[in-house]
Length: 357
Image (cartoon, rainbow, N blue to C red; front, side, top):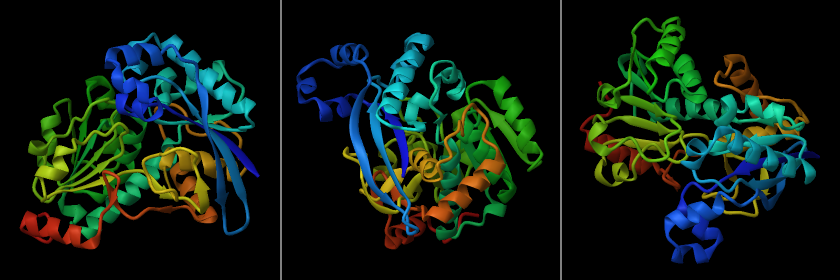
């Protein structure tokens, strides 16, 4: 039996209200002030994960009471200590490895500095998240009958761990690659790596550069949507890996000619009972949580995905582990809804072509 812990946090005030109805009557500013003073707590117990080979995993979800912006606005040491406290709580509950969900994976150089505070192995889960984003993006391109070798790929958040790995892995599949991020110096370093895979690559700090792309993978650490309807080319495929989302909900209501997919959604074997609403059907999980479960099933209790770089070797390894234990990419989803085949046909029709040229 594998035992794991996984850290979660509210993605917005609305998540706090789901847990505490009283918060609806208070000002958002007061709610934010109150929750940042709360210590981490066990949110739920996880059971029902069972592979065809009979291996099982159990775990706990531990809440880190911080809103996305607070991970950046509060002193980093204070945030790290709170995350570390949550890790220790998970270990006390029996977890032998802890996954860092959403923004808990960002402070301390992508979790590296947490090793100074905790004894339990940790992982950001970003390796499997990357693997599923790559797989989902290529699958979406195929369904849209989009010829990648004739298309431009844009990576938004290219300097982050997921964005960097997606850039390197996906770039050989495309005619041109555009790297987008806020830090030009960091972009130059990613550019040098990607250039080894595809000579036709450029980098920009201007988000408007995604207008030229037929395919976009977005994986930033922004806490508000960045990608609005006017920025997208007709017939484009957008894989949104970020949580909170990088793509504005307005895109799916105003742009019927583009395909937006949720990145990093995985089907988990058995009959998982999360004990908490993850915003997904019960048999699905985000890639970062799925990686943590995979490592627990393997009893691979070691610091796995940490820092800003994800090795291609580990992506291959986690794909093999997923296949071994029966984890699969979910059917394509967009904003919590499965995308039926007829929806994709309608998008192609609205774009006025079968494939983007």
